[in-house]
Image (cartoon, rainbow, N blue to C red; front, side, top):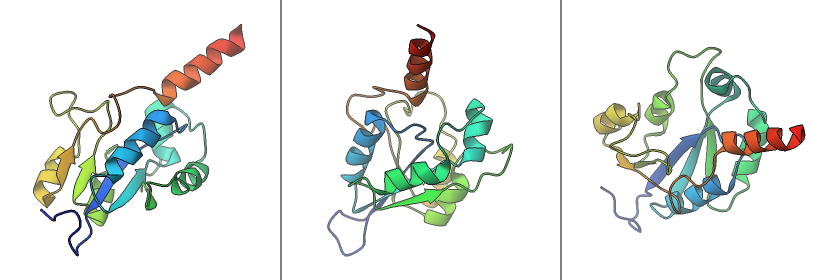
Length: 154
């Protein structure tokens, strides 16, 4: 593996919908960036979000612009998912990017639910990092939106 500080950049990738972005995401970006020299955020597009949760709260281009403005983030790559995707992974994007490390947030653990990208990462020699962020899963976009909906009912 490349050493941090060597002439070759260590590229770290993270992925997610980040819809809406919250403090847990920011903390994951900060910690993931410390693992290498460049942080690339693979951002799930609107088609992925609609397939996953039935809607996109914020359009992909807005989420992309916000994430690009964050200090730890070097660049953002939108996923290539089409409408009603069968493959919900970011394997296609990892094949294109070929990062050195694929970092996963506090809700992903090696002994938890299977991460679909594991086999590809092993095949391509991409190291997996788990529980990246401060204190595991401290917040969820779905939790935030549910709280907002609950407040509206009162």
